[in-house]
Length: 174
Ligand SMILES: NC(=O)c1ccc[n+]([C@@H]2O[C@H](COP(=O)([O-])OP(=O)(O)OC[C@H]3O[C@@H](n4cnc5c(N)ncnc54)[C@H](OP(=O)(O)O)[C@@H]3O)[C@@H](O)[C@H]2O)c1
Image 1: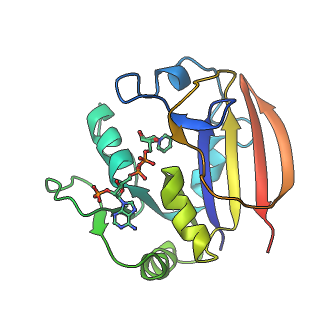
Image 2: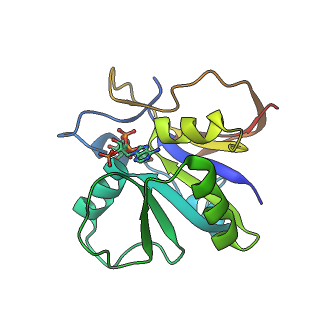
Image 3: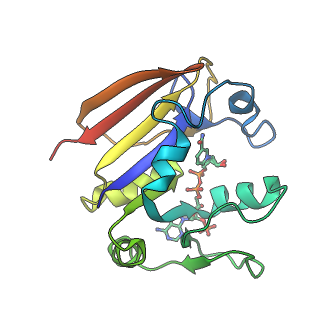
C-alpha cells in the first residue's frame, strides 16, 4: 500500500492557473490514459482518494456525467456542500486520522492524494507521502496553484514520455 500524489502540472510547476482559466491549458494537451504512467493503470491500483475543497468544487463544476469515482472519496473541508451523488465523505479531522481512514477504506490498495499541492504537503508533514507521479505539460503558466509547496528530497523511479507529457514517478526519500 502506497500513498501517492498523481497530478499534471505546467513546466513551471503549477497545477492550475487562475480560477477563470481553470485547466484549459491541460485539456489541450495530448496524453494517452492507457499509455506509460497513464491514469487508467494508476487508478486501477487505488482504493481510496482524498482531495481539497477547491478541487472538489472544480470536479462538481466540470462534471458532465455521473460521479467519476467508484471508490470512496474524502474531501477535506470546513465548508458545507450539497448532498453528494457518489461515495464522498467530508472531513476536517487531523490529517493522520484521515489517512488511517483512507488506508482502511483502500483495503490493501493504494491511496491517492489528488491535490491541491498544500493538502499533499500536509500529508508529507506527517511522513505520509510515499510517491509522486507527475505529468509535466509543455506550457508555462507564470502563476497559479503550486504543485507541492514544500522542500522534499526525491528519488526518480521512472521517467517516460506520454504524448505531450514528460511523466515522472518519484519516491520520497526517508
Ligand atoms: N492539474 C491537476 O491535475 C490538478 C489536480 C488537482 C487539483 N487541481 C486544481 O488545483 C487547484 C488546487 O487548489 P488549492 O490547492 O487551493 O485547493 P485544494 O487543496 O483543492 O483545496 C483547498 C481547500 O481545502 C480545504 N482544506 C485544506 N486542508 C484542509 C484541512 N487540513 N482541513 C480542512 N480543510 C482543509 C480548505 O477549504 P475550506 O476551509 O474552505 O473548506 C482549503 O481552502 C484547484 O483549482 C484544482 O482544480 C489540478
